[in-house]
Length: 520
Image (cartoon, rainbow, N blue to C red):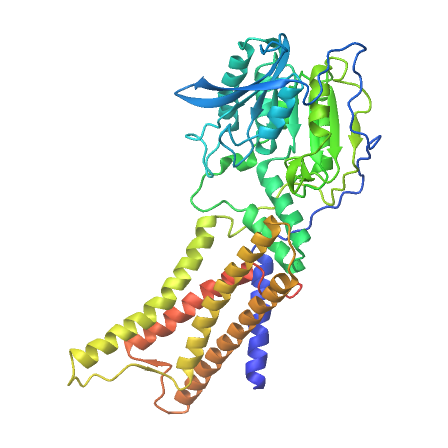
């Protein structure tokens, strides 16, 4: 018993050390200098006396389907125009083109509340369909996407009733990496609205969001080590070059006014850091574009809040955006620059440490697949060999393959344990991801699930210790002159080494993802 306990302890320490040195740690820097809004009132100032500022709901809205030609294809779109008393579109109105975030595609389904509210206040809105033939999870080109959306800007400038010199662009989330590119390449774009802007590169934003989601879910501290190892690695199959896209050089070229908007209930965005960075970057060349920042209390990523039994735009959001757009140029740099609810960003979104040895996702996935395959190969070959002996060679004098006494059950425990622990880890991470994305907490799943994964890992280490003990005993008996072999017959030898190699591959992977952390 003492030998088994001591061997198990040594294995656990070895796996903990392997996990510690195999990849980077996660130690985000806390935000200590918080951004303090001048007032909690988000209302936009600087409106000139007598300015023609429409109110949300003031005008009837006409919706018209349009076709937008792009380079090599066409997409649809939805144009919304404010109408006068005679039912005709209002004249000389500002216009805005919407740029989609991730996961949105159809004009009829995206920005419906926002685009309609702005149009009802006197701003012509155009929501194009997202071009999807060049947009995949693996490959995205934000500069090329900017060129596609530019066609919508060009179209809106030709619409009856639109002042072509007052057409701007509204981007949300991922779209805010595209909008600055558009304004830098077309300085005649009159203004830009950046809603829930990450500002930092996608990889940094992803790590920040995962960290925030995990903290909200209440996962054990050991789980955080997986963040740089998952987000920082080169993902399996290649691609994802856009993960390191840097929008800051484009922000430095901005010449038009910028409205930056965040919801303070959005855990996925660096809400303070993003606003500071936009202000700093637009001032790099000494001729900074005016920046206005607004924070909306209780609003989520889409600036929605619970209203009337559902999620709807914050009541003040459309009012403020339409006032800011229609009150140009006075509203562009009116005080206060920063207003609204007080944000509370806990940690800085910074560069993600890159894994050293397992930085290639193909290797990580390959290790799991190879480990599982090896665990199947040995027993499968042994089973086929046994079947051939019994059915085809019924009177054969060939000795049956066998393992040393007690080794078969230990090997079985090692193989099954390593697979079970890996499956449990995957199931646990999927369950945590579901809770995190739903903004829910469940201590039974989050804390209890992690305990189950780690206990399975310890049980597997005990099985590995028993395998080592059985092998050592068999060798000791052989040195004493007894005719004992660890494995007799090539199927037994193959099964022994395949099980060891497969289990080692899985245990190494489990250690990499933090299952065997001991505070090292």
